[in-house]
Figure (cartoon, rainbow, N blue to C red):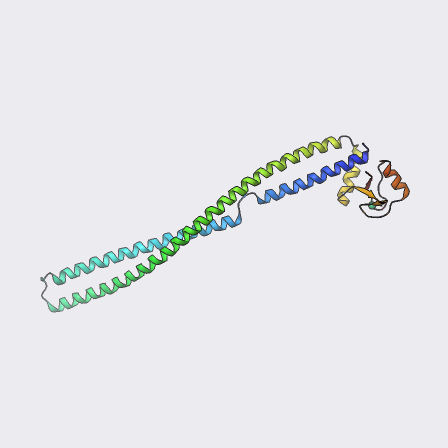
Length: 231
Ligand SMILES: [Zn+2]
């Protein structure tokens, strides 16, 4: 195997490593909390807090209603016991009952409103809870799949790294440095030659460059400096 073929193989491995590394970076970005899920969770929590608040209001109104009914019963008892014969006091007690009854009607109306509102919230919580459960399940599945994919990519990267070491061990340090230097500047260090042209810059090679490349010598394109490879 010629030196240039080895460099070309090394470049293929480096390209593979680069691709796998990019895939790994993408997986790392996707792993972890999902913003959509966090938002759905926060909204669900806020809905539950709202419901608890409304239920507390309902209990308060129910107590107020209970108190009003007790008050009405007490005044009615005074009115109808027959013990009180003073007409003025009886009229005053009747007025008191009327005031309590008006308050009671008001409270009963607001209780009905509250109960309707609570029912709407409960329906929404039920739907959103199911939606959240589904989101969480999908997220867990996705995370599991990503973790499996990550392990596979890491395995491939480890294999590629070993393969690279083995190929690089047969290339001199000086040539490796040349390769790395061109790679850093140009992205691709070794380019194929097709129809007498360098595939990196597309310029026609001199006869000398072409002959050296064909012989498998370490020939660089005089125009772009890339290493020329003829397979
Ligand atoms: Zn060139």
